[in-house]
Image (cartoon, rainbow, N blue to C red; front, side, top):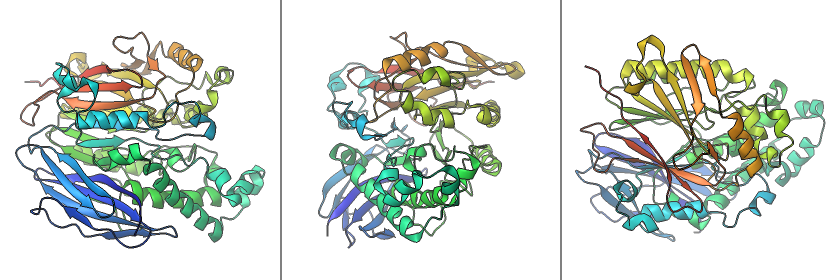
Length: 517
């Protein structure tokens, strides 16, 4: 037996008593053996998720009873080695990291970076306490930024090469639009596409730096366009509906379910999923809620998500109670400068091609603005009703950025925090950032306040210790609670952008809501 990929950890659910984690391992055939070091934990049994021509993907389910203090859960995988991950104490606030854009759009991009996976190596050093800041006296930097959860916000793999790696698709793409729309998606092509995605995940996630992290921090993942192909869903209606686009999507969705969600291809979604026709999820972990939006599955040229799905999500949110802070994971930033008017000008700048899919996909593009406005209103109304802080985290745009949405409606008091939504953008983990001229141009057009609606505004903020609103360096984000924070009281979250080449992060402190009465 040969292991092709894994172990890859996923947080399936978290309750007040248990931390439920799945482990994905792909082999060339037979199921591997996974053993728990702590004999008090139930032995894990392999579940076959997918059998492909290259191999078989298996899942192991682990249910870890929470203890008073943080615990290290150790496990051994046959033919692979020993691993461990952290589970927070039953009253301990969880520590999280966020990454996006784990790959390259083209072979030329690879040549523009010195070390492909430098960000992954740094994240692992932070997690293992081997970073140079480990001896720092600053408690917000050092309290074992060993993470309980790794949020992965999209483009976990880059499938853009599908158009030239598969001869049938290369020939299809070379035709005129009318011929492409009419062309059938054959079973032979479907088989080749399925093989492509299986091999892509095994290749990209088996890179040593990536694999070391995925085996040690339980993940929560949500796909974006590059996990399918560049710009999926934002093409014209006739292309979105054609057999080839739909056929590729179905193959990509199977791989997404198996590798990112650890779901079999023929069973309903798990307990954390909250929409019938997409993969949006909600986790409640103590005083923190995490809403993971699937903005790709139902995307068309006219919508990001179907109205029924939005209704299901906010119905579920309406039934939540007892959380101070909701983190909304949306792959593409909701608060971001509108590039619609700048598209023509940007074409003259080197690196514009890296932003083309963002222009098609962006929430601020004219066809998506009504849906964006409804989402902002619903988040603000929910936050005010529940007296809960909302923070949006996103990636996709290959820049680090910080924005804010503020409401003065209904006698809102800006200082109570529930009427102010921060937008944290962290991207890319691996993909190179656009050139300095593009960053400067976006920074310039971002220097204004957007009137989102009557008494609702949005604008981009400069980072502390920097005059820039957008930073074009590879980066990842950590979300760390106050040292010693527990579920017994409200606490701040320290958002730290770790920029490639810097020892110290850019920091934004997000305060809890101010309780009324």
